[in-house]
Image 1: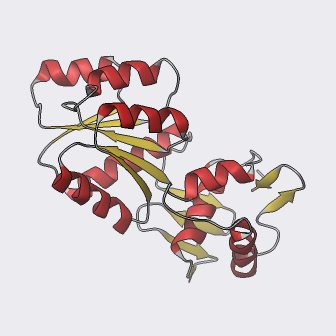
Image 2: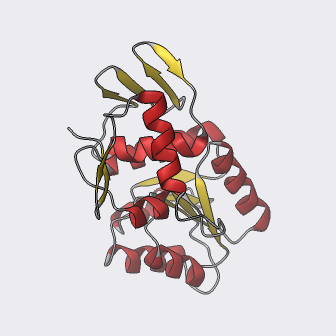
Length: 217
């Protein structure tokens, strides 16, 4: 999953990025509202972490413009803790509001919940027959046995599983698995899919030639 962090304070921006990358998210960064809005419009993110007091364009204005064009889940992360600020943020279209300073575990839990809800997934465990994905612990079990996956293998499986039944194109998968700085190779998806089939069964992921990949319902 790919997250955009829009935060002008360098140390905090770096901290949030580290927390997310440790949780194996792909992370893009923006230091002001103008750059953040441009990235949010140009790319398809699984969630946006948004500060409110930003240079060039405020978080309020950014959110208002974004909501007219996209429904990307937005978590406001702000030191503004007054009830009117929270109400304003939620009414403008934010999906959640977390006050600074924050606990890492709560930030991650709230992001997981936003991403799940946006994909229509209510539980932290996704079941695919004998296969289970625990989105919180990022653990996969097959017939009760733990299967070791790399971070990118899990991310690919997670995205396909949370959109089960829908054929996902290669460009969409690249957009959600890799950050803007990653120089991904064109055959990486084929490698990850091949690895998942070896570990979890060839029938799990179907290839739709010229369209992409799907986990059938």
